Length: 157
Length: 157
DNA sequence: TAGAACCTTGGAGTGCACTCCAAGCAAGCG
DNA sequence: CGCTTGCTTGGAGTGCACTCCAAGGTTCTA
Image 1: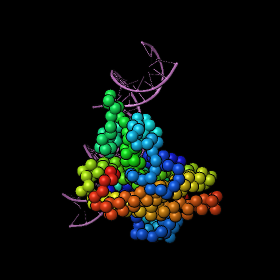
Image 2 (image 1 turned 90 degrees about the horizontal axis):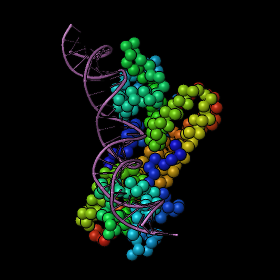
Image 3 (image 1 turned 45 degrees about the horizontal axis):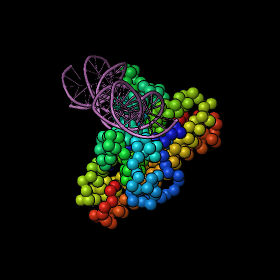
């Protein structure tokens, strides 16, 4: 009950700033020394290391760099991507659709229009979901008021 | 992409009316002749017959009446309950929590306070989720504008 | 009264999004 | 060097919320 339905990124403090690739938000390390281990990234994103590996396996990550012995070394760019993916996840977009988006990114600039359409469709879904939630708020408030006002009446639900 | 994440009740037209037990919304049949078959209820609620049987099995339905040969006959009251359950579902509440609520209803009037608390906790979750979604809208709009404005730039996501 | 369409059950299966496991190699510290 | 902690892999397991199945009984329409 108390938990969010989709535990993805631990929300950065509270601020309606758009956290996005090439945005002005600084990363823990300056560019050039940005070679994070999987557990550092796990802590930063709130995802588990398992999930990060799984994201890579299913094609949701743009090729992650490796150390000379084969361990993952994530870059600030990867962190940006994961932040954005976290936002997409919060919209309710399915993993399959996020993978589709990632493929479009890999395919290059000629997919800009398709990406925009995908995002606009997502935006419409989000607006619809907000409206839906506001509809449930009305019902919830009706009920809560009922329970608060009448501590013993014959209503059934 | 185009589908809602949680397909529950087919939303009644669009209207911010609170659709709730003892509310003023009329049912297909007048009280007294309200003995719907499972497929009628399936059509009304948008749930499948399978799901309606499953809801009953897990304790999410208040005892459904049966015909003399054992087939289910749902009442208007059952329809009201299912409408309300649909709203709870739309809030993102888990089936387990809805079953908990149904148990409280079965236990009688002395659980009013606990029910109110459950509903208020749900209400807080809904508000948080709305805020979260509005946060994603900001990111989405930023990206959409980017793709709309620059049909070929070196951004990576 | 025949036939189509609908209903019953317990239990098994599905799809999603993780989540974990075992066995073994890697990294950093005193 | 030894020790602890961390990282690697493919594949199997988990929990949720349905979703379907087989085999048989019921209800409705012609």
